[in-house]
Length: 477
Ligand code: ATP
Ligand code: MG
Image (cartoon, rainbow, N blue to C red):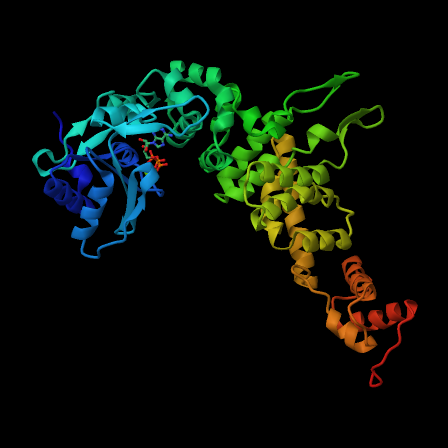
């Protein structure tokens, strides 16, 4: 019998102990909290899971009563769980239960059970560790599956037969890979085989849950580890077929192209060393997806992927929609980075005009820095001389951008003559001529035909208006 009182010094446990003892039921802290204590892991998602041998909802209510600020208890009756917030931490309460699963659903039928029943239904041995909270046995470790040893061995293992655990709730396949990536653990062979056998069952898991686990993989230090595991177990084509379609090298007349799937994984790892921005990492993941549908070979140019950025950006929308990810500004950000992903390389050339640079600054706007990070991460050549040359090229691009920007202030640029001024000057209601004039001014500035200044823009406005047959009603001008 081992006690780990030092794991449960957080003030909230004191109240749970009192509540459980007053109700005369056994209570335990279980799961991630206990695991992370033994791993000495800082967990930013920290929450506390309490299991009661009896009603979790009653225990939550009693705990709330005893806590000085009497927090609100959120009850999820159909799940038999309750949640309250104390000391800025979410604390989940559940009654110990036995579960049985139907073939087509990952929502089990449940009935009250013992602590051991509850530990049996947990996903991994390392997530089934429990510490007792009752005063009489405060800190007692209950570890029926040797989870502690698996923590030391860095092993992901299921409490029951892995085939049953994964088939019951296929989300656990993603969770296994997610924990393996986050903790840098190995999934035991038996378990890995069971995932490969049950991969088709991923289909019954909601997209939201899959995305949430996948995003955790994307936020690890080296996302390729998790993605490769998804690939080798066959989960990846179910979740992101666009990505696996990039795999393979074709050869025509002795000419090959690079394998864009493995290349992409390297790009994702590269960018993950530079940024924790999940969406920039997603942009790296998807930057080449347009290459599968656009791939062509012609004698003159060899392998080409004409317009893959444009097609790729369209695919981003469809992919987000399919995965039920919000179609918000994050999606637009990823889309835009994919669309612009080849542009910086096009202005590497010494001879490139300021106008091309201005256009890139204008098109990328606030995303320009992220776009440059993406382009640099895209360099995966193994040839050291080339590697250096490509990086130097981007250094030059950054310099050019800086020079042009300091001079022309193009980023977030608004044409110096506004739509309402055009309307007023020519006494117009909203109409397409206004857009034409505004666009002419914008184009002229980006091309460098006129400076980014009010007077010059106004002059051009009059010239273009005359061409369009508009009459100036403002007699002062
Ligand atoms: P983290 O909070 O760092 O993601 P965690 O282990 O706390 O890790 P949660 O999703 O918060 O993960 O779940 C809490 C606990 O509930 C887990 O430790 C595990 O015991 C159990 N659990 C969660 N999801 C499942 C599942 N799909 N199948 C079985 N047990 C699960
Ligand atoms: Mg948790």
